[in-house]
Length: 171
Image (cartoon, rainbow, N blue to C red; front, side, top):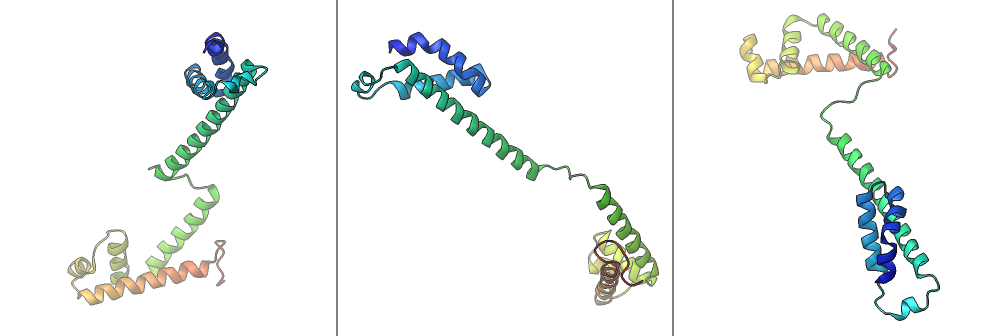
């Protein structure tokens, strides 16, 4: 089509700043051509300014292209955040609260009888099973399981007494 061929370079120049690259603008203008080429010749006969109509098509496609690209970038960024192997950095407040909780847990563990403390540490930090703990401590598996459970309950109660803001509610 003659109108398209004559205005194609100007249309690419027009679309480039909208979509951000000349390559994308070329794609936009090509897509505009397929929308512009009339399926029924009388369509163009009714237009007073077919060039203006062609520019409008390019503009609309370029804007749609930009919106689609922005949405895709947001989606990709959100996906990357959910798949990021690096943990997000804790805030100073989180570090302070976690530090307080960690000190409380360590103090609570230090107050436990030695076998109970060792059973808990082997389970939580060493990721050992009740059977492995029992072998290490020379006790039955049921006793190892009970020691770990008792220690966990003791630690959880200490943390709960600390309260949500890190203040000790008990005193």
